[in-house]
Image (cartoon, rainbow, N blue to C red; front, side, top):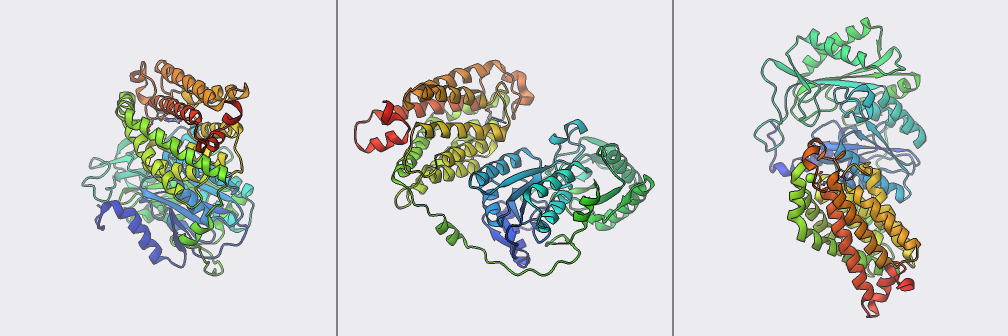
Length: 594
Ligand code: ADP
Ligand code: MG
């Protein structure tokens, strides 16, 4: 039971504040998480880790020299929002690029992925290495689908040591990938954890039973077994991991026995002793092992075993010193404290000089978001009902929450003296969208809005080519992050025909307004046709049969939105007052072609 809090809703935030207060020598709070409070040599690669809260020492406890440069800290067991990851990575970046590394969970992939797109677009070279060590979560042939559990530590440690040694981003990434490929974990649970304020654990295991293949977010195991003796448990964990060993495995391994929250250290040590003997009997040499709490799940009763098969290079970085609040190894020279720019200075630094053309497009972008909001309000219920057929019924409310936040953020951005560029308006709007909407579509819409904004930038003039670039960036962001393809029955089925029609029409010399109208019609037709498809991505996939005969909610909402935007642009361009001429130009080649 988690019992120390004032308000359960503030648990993660207040715990993080207290963690920073207790570890000033290591970490400083930034908006979205923590970064090192000590000097980072210029040009060093910044390893940025993160995920939900409730896993201490993962992830904030692993920030310090020789390990992570920063950690993005989400709510309890919830991914940090893309904006949080972005801000932590920006604060952690020392000019050598950023490696994002985290456990493979859908929400984290979307949010970290969105942050990566944005960092790269701003010229901060950013890569990602997902941790996929949990052998219970997918078969060996589908290693990329596995979840990340305590294997986080081996990947972070080796990447962090490589960064500390001054290696390039390419090399740090390569070592992290190699470590992940050679790391395997398996866990068992004896009881689930209880979220702050909840009155029951997320799952229970019947007395005298053990659940094999635990997750670290209260996911129950995949099978239940009678509670074994310590020797039997050690044999089970070791044999399963050895069966799954990587192809090029050698004989030197790191072994990590990890407690999930309430298993006593004495018990972990007892088990470790037996595991070490079994590994030795299997001809393996255990190198610099760990035994303790390294990746937890609040007060969960359970433990896991992780093995990393070393080679000479990995062993060197595993053994290298590290100095963080929760993980210390060897000796590192003391580091000077660094001056972090306060939030006010950071904001002042970001003040842009908006060009007149950009200010007009920025206003137009905010207007268009207002139109999106209207159309979503009108169809909120219908979209929810459609999502309830095979999904979870939240598409209407999710879109509504996202667009409400986006409109508010866009209007706030426009309050700046001299207006705001589409880049500024849409990055603020997209960030707010994905932060508030929750759900898959919210993260994807948020990223797409940001990507369109970055494509539009803050330029001296705008033409039809910019509208094409914005549409392309919008669609690319969604396909890159969501990885859905045509025919998977997602919004992508409406997005692709929309973009294709829009670009073809523009190429053929059609005005922006008419091209948009044609593209919106294509999106509508395509959205209707999704009724014939079975969902292959997203939450509706398990209920594929139920979804047959009904269109995909995300495709329908996109078609509705594109139609409304096309109408609005047409009306704007038709308006005679001079004030609209810059908007007309802003909207693309309207000025030339209409
Ligand atoms: P959630 O699925 O998290 O409940 P929503 O209900 O708001 O989110 O959105 C569901 C819609 O999201 C689906 O109808 C589909 O169009 C879209 N979607 C889901 N997964 C993907 C994906 N991987 N790529 C593109 N779109 C997706
Ligand atoms: Mg849904």
